[in-house]
Image (cartoon, rainbow, N blue to C red; front, side, top):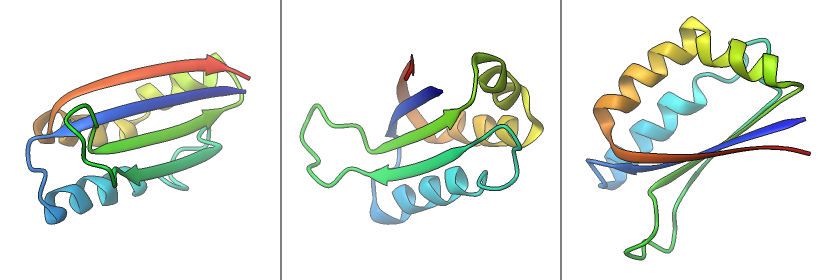
Length: 95
């Protein structure tokens, strides 16, 4: 199993802006066959080192992760996030 985690710092950190980004990410659920698990969390601590949103996804293999990244639904989300996020960091690991 491959776990793919991405943390986003948003340009619009208001509750409305954060909820919009969360909704866009959650809209991938059930629309990409390779995506086995999808979780989106909004930071509650809001410290200077915090990111605003965490995306946690799981895949059966690296090939499935690659298929997800190329999928048109994911590409729509990428376009949105590129305009909404100030920065992002990711970690991918095998369990």
